[in-house]
Amino acid sequence: MVAHRNQFIDDNDLSGSTSLTHLMDMNDRDDDADEAHIVKHSPYYSESKFTKLLTSKAGLCILDLNIRNIHSNFDELELFINRVNICNPISAICLNECWIGKNTSTSNIELPHYKMFYQRGNRRGHGHCGLIMYVHEQFRCKEITIDQENSTWDYQCIEMSHHKPNSKKYIICNIYRLPGEIVDEVNTFTDEFTTFLISVKKLKHSAFICGDYNINLLSINSKRHYNNFFDNVVAKGFFPRITLPTRLQDQSHTLIDNIFTNNIKDSNTSASGILINEIGHTDHKIIFTFEENMNYVEKSVKYITIERNDEISVKKFIDELKLLNIDVKITESTNNNPQENYNLFSMLIKYAKDKHLPKKHVKYNKKNIKSQNGSRMAC
Image 1 (tube, rainbow, N blue to C red):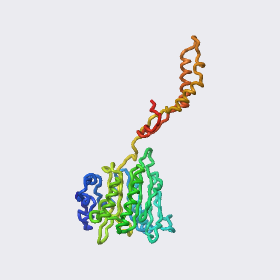
Image 2: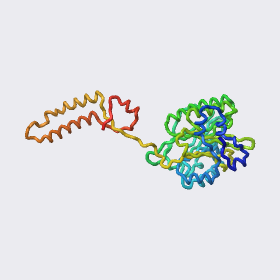
Image 3: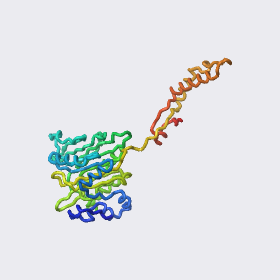
């Protein structure tokens, strides 16, 4: 698979093989064909091209950046957001390496029309930590907790959905792993992060895991512990949306920032990329993924009616009928209108049935239906 070229690649002397898709194409694994179909090339975008993408289509847009000090670079970030948020605003923004410590103020880093979630850096000797997530006001959102060991990395997670009825829910996570090349440390992170992905997957929503992993995916064919990390993530059903270098320095080009997602079904309507413009003094590029989704609506939910029909309830129903003495209340006179007896009989039966064999509407689920011991579907 040959990476698509553009002027930015030529200007920065990036070879056509400096891409994750190219490396995956070189591997000899049996599942390469499937992975190559899922992992799409993520080109470099100019700001105008990115703005055009946002304004031309409605959808979910998630942006990620290692900002290297939010206070120094906040003004430029805010100006950028204001420029691109013309029609369809960026849905969620993940920032890592924010440099917000125990006593750092957060009152001056709030974005208009966004709700802010932040996590202070608390690792001794690493004052550059700290995570921030902004979610646009058109979304409902709440912070969620995932109990997970994280020896050399930090994370935060939110659940978000559009304010429209029956909106689809998304899980967005923000990750920052401290730099480190020691094999044992990378392997420990791989084990912890794999467990984390399992927990996220159990939430049964489309998830996007954004952040700076400080693991260069362009080295998966030369560093076994990097390849082990990548293989573990893919094995859990999460695939990268970013395939080209995200940190460009004079002597190196690395792919250490990424967005992993289990949202494979919508890959045909997605677009991901790297912005070539710079924010402040960080040498990381802004990365993004975009899901074209006009309605944000989940699949329609089917409801059925369940009638209680277990042995105890049936017995209570029969006992209730005995107490009602229906045969005594029915008029036996030949002059009586038979319709009146029928109406009385029906009313008493319905009373006893509603009391002891009630019906209720539930979401259709094969497992739930089978587990309804003694119950049956009612017309």
